[in-house]
Amino acid sequence: MGEKDITEKTLESYNDVFADILNALLFNGKQVVDPKDLEDRNPHSFYKADGKIRELERDVVKRWKKHNIRIACIGMENQTDQDPYMVLRVAGYDGTEYRVQINNLRTGEKPYPVITIVLYFGYKGRWNQPKTLYETLDIPEELRPYVNDMRINLFEIAYLTREQVNLFKSDFRVVADYFVQMREKGEYNPGNEVVQHIQEVLQLLNVMDKEKRFEDNLNEDIVKGKVSNMSEWLDKVIKTSEEKGENRMGKLMKILLKQGRTEDLNRAVDDSEFRDQLFQEFQIA
Image (cartoon, rainbow, N blue to C red; front, side, top):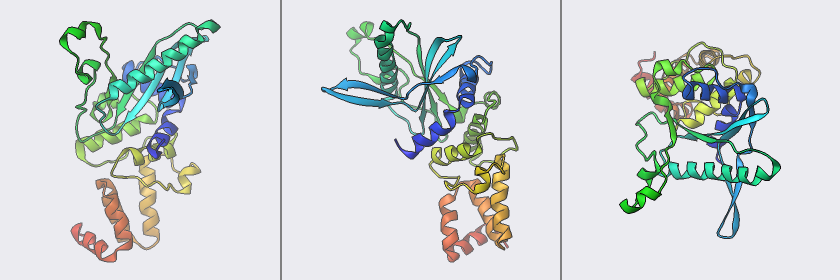
C-alpha cells in the first residue's frame, strides 16, 4: 500500500476517531457508536480468481458490537481522486466480507450487515462519478429488472456545512475543517482546539492534499507532546525561523504555507534569487 493509505489508517484506526466519524456522518451527531464497542477487523481478505488466491485490502474496517453481539461490520474508504468504478470496488469489499461470514456460520455465528462509507477529500470540485451500480454499468433495458442496484455511501468532506463540521468531537474535526476552508477560501487558518493525535492529523493532511501544505518531517516537539494544536505548530515553525535571525524568511514561510505554495517555499530555501523575488512580491522588508 502507498504512503497515503498507511497515513490514513494511522488516524482513522483510532477507535475514538472512527466512532466519531460514524456518529457525525451517519447519526447526525448523536452518540450512537461507543468507541469501546469497536473491535479491529483484519483489513486483508482473500478471494479466488483465475485459479489463484488474491488479496483484497481495505483502508480501515471494524466490527461494531454490543454485549458481545456483533451489530455490523463497517468499512471506511478514503478517496482523494474520483474513481468511476468506486461502486464496483465497494461491492467487492462487501461481498468478500459476507463470504467470510458464510464460512463462519458453521461455528454458530449469525450473519450481520456490512456497511462501507467512502470519504472523498477533493475540494476543487464535487464528486461527479457514478454512485450507483445502474450508473456504472451499461445494462440492457430488458435486463434491468434482474440486476440489483446498489448505492455507495459517499461523503464529500470538503462540502460539509459548518454545522456538520461542528458535529465532530474528535481530531477529525480539524481534518474536516481544513478541507472545508480550502474549498471556501483557498487557504487554511488553524484554530486553537487541542488535538489528541496531532502527529497523525498533520501526517494525514500532508498526504491527503496533493499540494503538500504540511511537511512530512514533523519536529520532535510534536512527537513529545509539547505542541497540542495546529496554531501552536504553525507559530512554532515561524518562531524557530525567527530565532535563527531569519525574520524575513519566517514571514515568507507563513505566507507561503497559508497559500499552499510548499514547492515555492522549498525552492526559496536554496535559491536566494528566487527568495528575493518572493520578498519583493509580498513586500517583505
